[in-house]
Length: 189
Image (tube, rainbow, N blue to C red; front, side):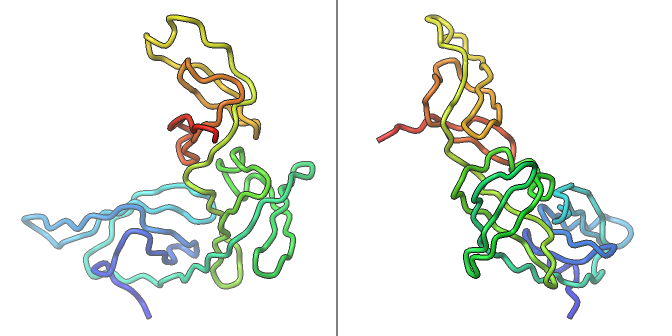
């Protein structure tokens, strides 16, 4: 059963040129002259790359039914990351490239989502935010905090992010995995 442009919603997935894409953004446009159309921003599920595409109003696409499977990151072995299916307990080795940019924020026992269509894993979703310990950063100096600005900090997973000057080694911080931005310092109870 095909879906047409009037059914478009954010998050809907469909086949386009034999690949699965998800709608990130869409806008219906009715110009004064000519036919209406829909402007979209689409994310290729397999690679995470984003494209812009315009559809004629009423154009049809084939829906893709993405199954979301809960996986848990167990450990890194060489260049591979070992995940466990939380339903079958099957262990699956994957490369960092298959997980994408979010791989550098993975810590042991963290849950991620595998996206499957027709029995094939197309990609993985890492949580939008993660809480990680600061492993290394320059010490804060008096007066630095007033000027704003930031300094690099290496996290427990090996990822490096820019943090405010008042952040010290051992602090727990929240990071946005989509942008790599520091969000806040978490109080350790």
